[in-house]
Length: 152
Image 1 (tube, helix red, strand yellow):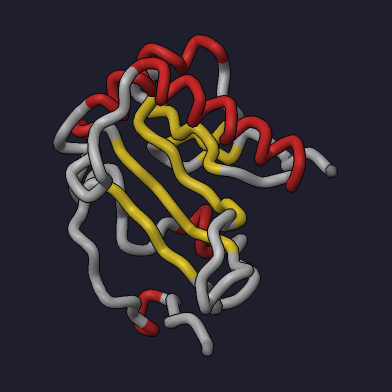
Image 2 (cartoon, rainbow, N blue to C red):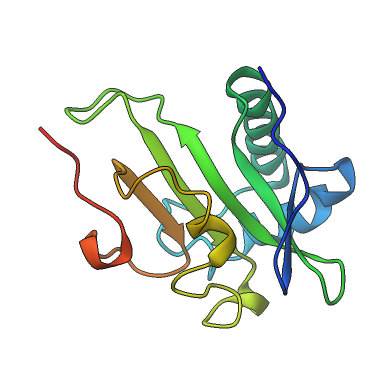
């Protein structure tokens, strides 16, 4: 699979492949109940490591994944964002999921602008099938934000 060109740089953030040095911050993020509020439960260190291994394997297999997001101001892991093929069976699959998560100190408008230019400029079309985010509550998909519901 072709490697995605990295890093992707915005004014505040750096989107990049995962590094082994990200593991401690990724573990803290996934163990934080505020970050994981809309998931079944926070993850243990072992579960976070397995998730990171799956994220990296997805990149190797498909050429895209949920990438690390680094805060350019301090070089710390700010969260993750990206795309992933959905592996479960449902009426709307197969599909590609859009997902993101921010470590709790970075949640809010500063870390997640409503229309990130780096993502908007690379979006192939306003069609998507699945959307997942953390830690904001679930919401309806919105054509205004360039998202649409799954077709039957």
